[in-house]
Length: 215
Image: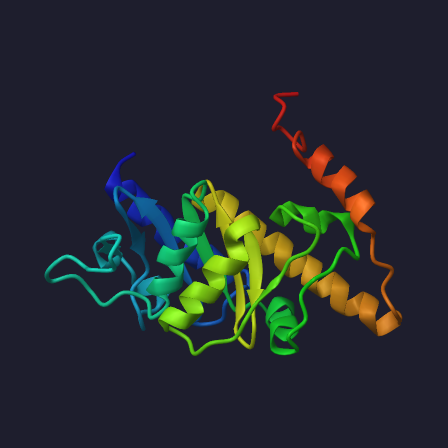
């Protein structure tokens, strides 16, 4: 994979994320695994102004290269996500409207719809709150993503992992759609939650969902 191409893909993903309303302004951040570290969006820069050279490479210990721009303030939980999810090649963090509303209410997304299995389990869980940019938040995210590819973050937003930037953004979109549906269902009354036995069947079927079986 070409590094310059990947840097541009990170910018394109950030622009799509912002353009779709998943993260207003410069909120949220995007990264991709690269060599022994990662490439990540810089802090405090409008996505429209980014060029590939602005994307920051961080070693696995969090050290940037000399002369690099300052990375996103959330670089710690991006690195921790890669540590927790060895299958992840990219991470997208958004402040999307409904996922953030649930996160601020400290409500995970339960199995009100079978599609919550898209994140790899019976729910889309909620990482415990910690101040943004801290090691504590990174540890909370890592613990929550250990057996999920997406989660909400208390009083913050959502984070989604994928093998590629495209996959991570697609999952972030799905989480936001499920969050919006869950909020709507809760307004109608008590949601009917699918039980563990049914979700086990759903997760089994998800092993060959879509094009995974080549069909």
